[in-house]
Image 1: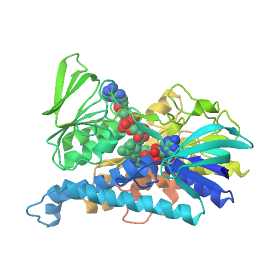
Image 2: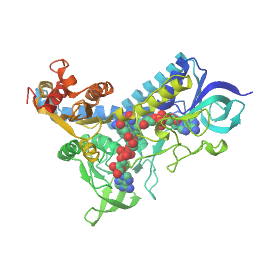
Image 3: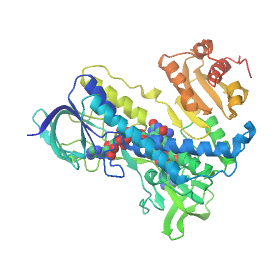
Image 4: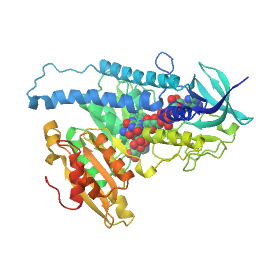
Length: 475
Ligand code: FAD
Ligand code: NAI
C-alpha cells in the first residue's frame, strides 16, 4: 500500500525544502522527494542553489577575491606576498566541502522536523482518492499518496541552439563551477548575473575573459546610473564585454572553442577560447514530471502556470520557485515555499513581489530593491533621488574599497522610499536595511533620522537618505 502524506514536496531546493520544513512546523505529515546526486551518487538536497548555484559560486567568488586582494591590495597594507599561486583544484575542493556542509545541514533539518526524505525522481501517476499518487524512482523507490502536492522542481541552464553542453569545452553553470585549471582564454555568452559573477572569478585568477551579450544595453534591469558605473569598473578590471552581439555558431576542436558572431556594427568576428561558459538564462524543470497524467497546466516556457498565491489549475497542487513565473532567485523560491505551507494550514502566507531584492556578487557588489530611476520615469512617478559615494565613507576608506555609491529614490510628494540601489562593498548586506525600511513604507527622512553606527558602510545609506533632501553631512 502507498504511504500517505498530508503534503508531498517535489524538489529539495530552497523552494521545496523550506516549504517542507514550514509545513512540518505547522503540524503536517510531510514527504520531500529530490533527485540531486553528489559525485558518489548519494543524496544532495538543496537543489541548484546549494549544488551548482548560489553557494558554490559564492565560495569561488570568495577564494578568487582573496587571491586578487593578495595580488593587488595587500601591498598597500604593508603586507608582502612572495610566490603567490593559485591551486584551482584545491579551491574547487574547498567549494565542494562548503556544498557538502549545506547538503548535510538540509538532511539534518529534514530529520529534526520529521520530514520523510526520498532520494529519487518524483512524477505524477494519477489523481488518487483525496489527493495525488506520486511515483518515486531511483534510490528510494516508492509509491506515495499526497493530499496536497507542492511542485518545486526548479530550473536548468538553457543551451545555445546547436551547441549542447559537454561540460568540458561548452560549460553550463555546473561545469563552470568545477574548472580545476585556470583557462588562458575564457569565452562567455550572456552578460547577465552568471556571466558577470563567474567571469569575475576566472578573470581574478588570470584568465583573459570576453563576454558576448546579445542585448545592446548592459544590465538592462539595473538602474541606469548603477549599470553605467558597473560597466566602467568591470572594464577597468579587465573584463571584455561586447554588447549587441549575434552569435552565429559554436565549434569545438582539440584547440578549444571558436564562437562566430556578428558585432553590433554588423562585422563578422570569431572569439577563440579554451572554454566557453553559456549563461543565457534558465528553463523550468517540468520534463519527466508527467504533468499531463493529472492535467497540470504548463505555460509557453514549460513553466507551471500559477496565480499570485502559487495555486496551479489543480485543487491541492501548488508550485513555487524557478519552475513558476517571476525572478529565478533562491530567496523568492524560499518565500513562496513558506507562504504556500502557511496557506495550506489556513494562514495568510504572503510574498511581496515588489520587495524581492536582487544582488550581483561581483566586486563591487550590486544590489537593489524596488524601482529603478528609468522605471519611475516610464511610469510618470515624480521622485527625488539622493546618492552618496563610498569615496566619502570612512569605513570604506579603511577597508580600501571606495568604489560605488548608495542611491535612494523617494516619492516627490510623500517621501516614501520607492527604490534603493547600491554598488559597492558588501552591497548584498546593505540592501537588507532598505528592504526592512520599504516593508514598513519608510520615508527617506525616516532612514535619515535613524542612528547608524560609526564607522559603517551603512552610514552611506543614511547619507543617501539625507541626500534626497540635499543635506548630506559628509559630502
Ligand atoms: P532548485 O534549486 O533548482 O531545486 C529543485 C530541485 O528539484 C533540484 O534538486 C532538482 O534536481 C530537483 N528535481 C527536479 N525535478 C524533480 C523531480 N521530478 N523529482 C525529484 N526532484 C526533482 N539565487 C539567489 O538568490 N542568489 C544567488 O546568489 C544565486 N546564485 C546563483 C548562481 C548560479 C550559478 C545559478 C545557476 C543560480 C543562482 N541563483 C541564485 C538562482 C537559484 O539557484 C535558484 O533561483 C534557486 O535554486 C531556485 O530554487 P528552487 O527550489 O525553485 O529550485
Ligand atoms: P540572466 O538572465 O541573468 O542573463 C542572461 C543574459 O544572456 C542576458 O543578458 C541576455 O540578454 C543574454 N542572452 C540571452 N540569449 C543570448 C544569446 N543568444 N546570445 C547572447 N546573449 C544572450 O541569466 P543567467 O546569467 O544565465 O542566470 C540565470 C538565472 O540565475 C538568473 O535568472 C538569475 O536570477 C539567477 N542567478 C542569480 C544570481 C544572484 O542572485 N546573484 C547569480 C547567478 C544566477
